[in-house]
Amino acid sequence: MSEQKMIPSFDLSRNHQRVKEEVKVAIDRVLETQGFILGPEVDTLEKEIAAYLEVENAVGCASGTDALILAMMSLDLKEGDEVITTPFTFFATASCITRTGAKLVFADVDPETYNMTTESVLEKITPKTKAVIVVHLFGQMCRIEELKEELAKRNIKLIEDCAQAIGAHRMIDGKIYRAGAVGDIGCFSFFPTKNLGCYGDGGMVSIPHDSKRAARIKSLRVHGSGKTYYHDEVGINSRLDAIQAAILRVRLRHLEEWNEERRLVAERYRLLFGEKGLLDVVTPPAEDAGNRHVYHQYVVRVKDRDELQKFLDERGIVTRVYYPLPLHLQDCFSSAGYKKGDFPVSEMLSDEVLALPIFPELLPEEQERVVKEIAAFYAGRK
Image (cartoon, rainbow, N blue to C red; front, side):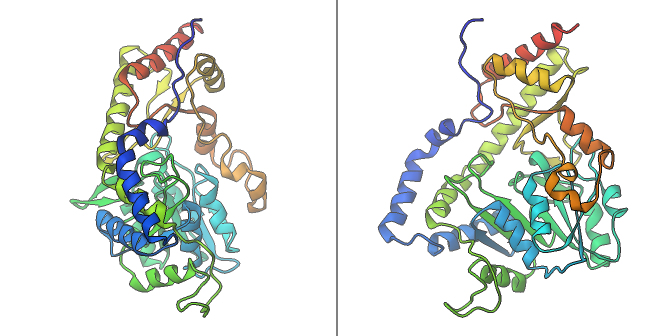
């Protein structure tokens, strides 16, 4: 096999080249002030994110995981309370629940969108249920409107895990709502590989219509302090750096353009799979009606997943598996009492999903090579 250039699953350097001069200006602005923790840059970013999401409040924090933890802390959960979420997601979605002492309850997902189904959530509700964390997985929103009214009737808080979905939106009752603007609280990650990523760690909590909760989360992120050295409760240290906020302000201006480029990459994959006659062995991700999917990941379902991944790796094409073991089967959550077979769709997806390279700057010829190699793999197995 002739040497070919590697195709990465994502390439941050290509994206940085598009904004590096703007980023230099932003960083220099912070260096001149020597104010590195919270401050005007963070304040302004919070206002800009709130305006983008069309919510009343947004609170910056140190990471997407901390955004979830702060959200849970603001609910005053106690031992015996139950919180429902999906087992087919990143670890932090569940760990933020167990950290509070609340009981972790899982609900299964849809095999086409990979998001939790309304039916699976509703059947898990008990009198002890205090919150539901929906995850807008891989870049598209759940059917959150189907849950909102019922949860509100029961005084159950609705939390949106938007770590992979900033910029995604959904048509609800004739109006467009962005991820993080529908539930009681939205949680965002600015990890570098996210659609809106900084150059380190960062996160954000959106609070659509509760200024009192927003003020409390602002206090919780600085050890539960309002006035310096006076603490109303025990919080955590989760402050967003000013340099990261300044970088995010630059990158936020380009987010819509980059998300549209991701959508073009996704559509090109779909067309190429059809042209190569692969749709009997490759199932592309489904975009739910009413959604604008922003494709943080392009996750397909495939036959012989592990063998295909190895085949592609040998040919310089980097793919990833999100997620190889659903959370209900992780050792650290064994106390929740779940076993293999409890969530068959999540378990099936963990065996079949493969994330193909996707980022705004991915070239058409690179995508053609990815699909050509997938076609070669399956041709060799007939």
